[in-house]
Image (cartoon, one colour):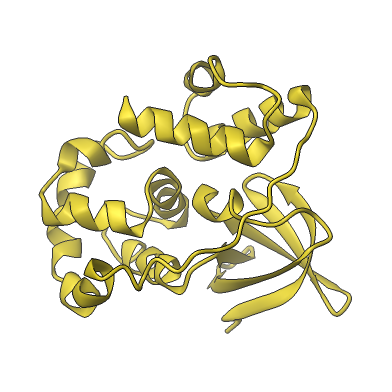
Length: 205
């Protein structure tokens, strides 16, 4: 099992990244919350990881915080929630926000995430509620939300918008919906900043 990778970030193509560890390039899929906090390409990075082994592929997922990975692992144990949907949930809200939704029975907030309908939201609340005793104290004092330093730079407006749109589509948003989410944002921001702003706007709207 690969539990953590530390090396040089050599590529970012949302939601995928590549980390070079002593000459070996590891391809990982990340949540958007982790992606927007990553440093620039060619900088050093360290991520917690989860490896999924299928008959046709070995898939590696990267997380900026250990508790984000813990939540990912808990989510994929829920009936009907696979890695793709778990990443979409973690991209739309951080661990603290998800905890509040479950604690407050806020299924409406969960249904704003792509791929999460009313029944799935209710199932998440019911099944995840029993897992909170292990995390409650840490989450309430904020110690679970360990920051990943962000050093986002600038990119061309065209490439940033195209990459952000592709990333949102990969999360499950329709192309027209992704375009609408990005329509009123400053196109000269980095891809990561556009994704973060689009998701924040979606949740608050």
